Image (tube, rainbow, N blue to C red):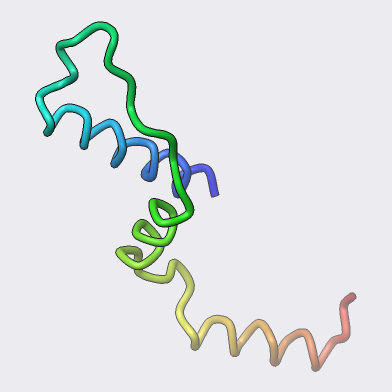
Length: 66
């Protein structure tokens, strides 16, 4: 979660630099929006494969740990 939030923030900061306004001391980045987070998530690959999730589900069913 932290990495996603940080990436969304860096994307907005990047826009400020790309616009050329970063050198203006009064310039501020725009507020983060839900679209920023959706964009980051769309660009990300899953960190856990479906196979690993399936293995965890099988283990959970077999041993009913929780």
